[in-house]
Length: 346
Image 1 (cartoon, rainbow, N blue to C red):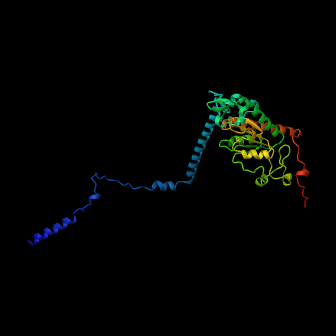
Image 2: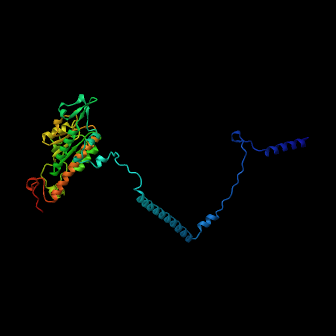
């Protein structure tokens, strides 16, 4: 009896020991277990690569560089092959002529002799303002009324534009200073281009009141240089100059006179001639040489600015040609009157 109970107790203890441990439910899975096989990595190939002869490494590098050079050579040949093919086939195909190019008026502006009524009409130069805003002094420039808008006569516009171009050309031929002013949005490129052609100056931002009447205080610190007849700078005379530092223009071209009434008033006080685009609502008596046209059209502005800039370029060319022959179209400065005496060398 005692022996039987002892054996039963021992067998229960042994069964408890060999029993598999209980697993938590959250870590259990219903998927079929897969067996993985790990393969030991042999280091023998790596060791062999490290212990390979250095001569073999050099040979492999040379082979790689040779392949890259051959690839570059093929790219070079393909490039020149494409260039030759383009040179051979560039004339094949259609050519569109007479297409509208917005940059043509800035890059290649027309001359005064090339102005036509069709060009002014395409630039919308004939469109004025409403009849309720007109200035009675512009009656001689108005062709008629359509849909409540005044129509500017393009014959008068072309005649006044040619006259203004002749004025700009003569001022440039005599070595005068020309100032182009346009302060509206969109006028900057045309103003700068006209100044570049005529070798003048430009203002495309707000006009500072007093720049002409009080120029010594506002522009007195600006640099001034002295040039000879062919526009070569003379630094020796520049250091001895006794003139006021602020120079005034000999001609002012204003593309929006309505907003620059102060500028035109200062030009009148200093007897400076002016050229301006006069719309049907502007006062033509504010400028010396009015050009009746639409001052709100950018295309019209590009045409007028290009013509005036081209005229200034022609005047500068004539002046330089005359200077090369020894003919001066202006009176030169007198040294004893406009320059200080040279300081003696120490």
